[in-house]
Length: 219
Image 1 (cartoon, rainbow, N blue to C red):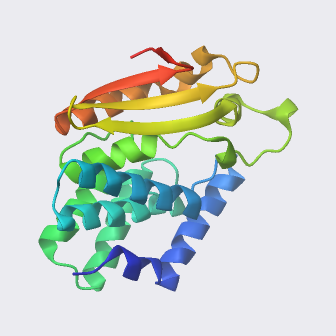
Image 2 (cartoon, rainbow, N blue to C red; image 1 turned 135 degrees about the vertical axis):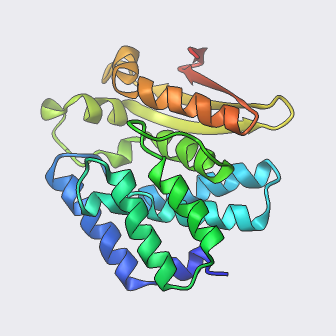
């Protein structure tokens, strides 16, 4: 079986991820490079591990997490679909079995809130891992005076933790936000679609989704 660690060693994939992130940098987006994709891969794998999924599903979730944003190399618009097509060509060329390719490609093609939906456990784990990655270190802009709303919200997040309780069948996104930088309402303005997507992804995994901001449960 083609593994996540093998993919991370392939220089062409590193080139695609770096170039995709460079395109987003030029458009003023937050960081979508190796810190983000490796975080998403690890978080998705951790969720499925704690929920008792197979080693194969866990490995595929890591691969989907690593490759999920390469479509930004083509264009930010519909990047999940173009990324899925790129992933298909890459994984097929590396000899991955069709069943495994289908799982990874479906997850990547459904990870964006504009068109995506949790259609499998791997897809659900990818959505939760991706949409919960909100943190100060993703902000590229160093001038607070010129922050847009996305910069402000991400920069204001001092802590973000995705906590799973298998016993209670719930998953909590717990955020600590510096409201002097960004009011909580700004978070909802840009992330409400993502939170709805997380709720549906959690339901696919048999969980309830909850959002806590500054120790106050909001969802």
